[in-house]
Length: 599
Image (cartoon, rainbow, N blue to C red; front, side, top):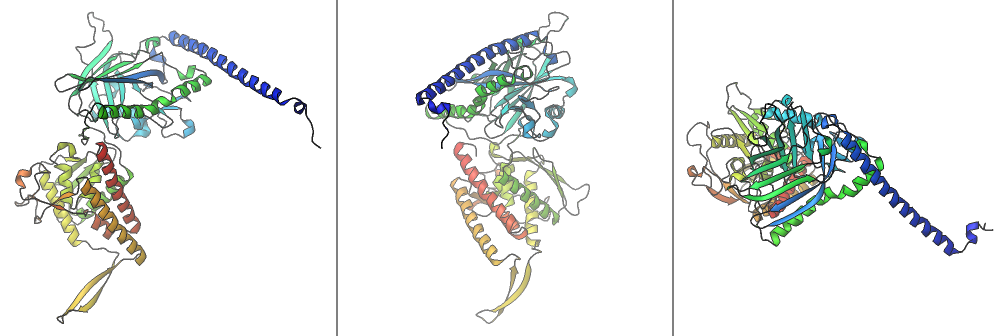
């Protein structure tokens, strides 16, 4: 028996009408509630903002709805703009909340805000666990500034939302104890994860009213500085920037005028003619997270959550228009100069880095020459290597790695000599991936070549088992052969040999198709001392500078990498698989970047 309810007795159309009426009523009620809530909350926020006497009491991030515009003036005229969120962070005294958090990258995800401003996105690489204020002090000290001179610092940037951040520039406002905007730090990031940080002191002749004995604050900050950084594929690294910005965060300034964020960056050509103008400005008063309802905060995030994610697609679309419609040519990205923070290592480059350092350590351990060698790289501790019988007065050589591509270049170089010439003395300064403070760079290269050759002749795999077999030649003489048997099974060795063969030839083919397969072949007698005459290496003048002393170089196609033999003789099968994967991954990545102008 089926129980019949009151609802079952009603016609079906009655239930449909009731459901539809309820749904429409709910939508209308929610709309009216949200409208009234927004009006009430906006009024409450405005009253709170206007009742604040100054920015001195603010200890949390201010969130501004903002806009950015880009206007290109040469060689074609084109302009576009879009919305995005601006976060203003009081660096010296800032607390986090559910809406926006600062220095929270090391905390569990449930302790982070929806919007985040974290140390890895700013200033130098490393030391992120100590927070933004500590990183700022370290950076100022490295530039010979006293951090205590700047008790008030505001950072204007685009916050990270759900782990995503698209921000090409950040601006630090540094105030002295008397509330004067004395200096700015300007950060620029490009699409290749490279970062340039400029310290821009205020120009004393601009923006200062000093008609009376009482010193008034700057109303506007204006200054110039050299570019020296690859940002756009349509612009060279030459030229300069100028900035003009309002003094938005003076400690004694009323908060109700703090919405006047207005920055203008102008790219100037070498002749000081404007080429591109970029502007960032706020469009309303700031949102103070601790003073808004939670529901309003979520509605605010929902309405702005896509702005950050759309920045990159919009930028790529504009680049496509400039390239296809206006026929602007792409410029090949130069390698970063000293003072620029390079991109982070890929996993493959990190693997090659460890092997290369181990290789240097091994060859120096057997070197007959005595010297020190240091290898420094942004974001890593300096590696100090020395030979076995080194003395306190032994020569010291230093190599500074400018970009992780230093390790990517390894896979296409048949000798360490070719590798170091390509990295240190490439004829095109924009293609150099390392530098050295050694006066005789060629002498350092020859020294390491000699040490590597000595290691190759004297090394022997200690894990191998040797035995001799004898054969009889056609003339009746006995021939003794030495066999080396590895400990892994024959099947693994056969598979590994096949992979070596395939990866080597794929690597060679990809390198040759991209123009990287033409390498240098030099035959130089190893000297007994690098200070003796006759140690100059012959090199092709097409590739390297200082080629006037190396006129007899020859160019050959070589599919080998100078680390191949070292890895096969000193690493097990798993490490060899990792090395081959790193090589193939690196070559393919460089091939793709070469198509987009980033290789």
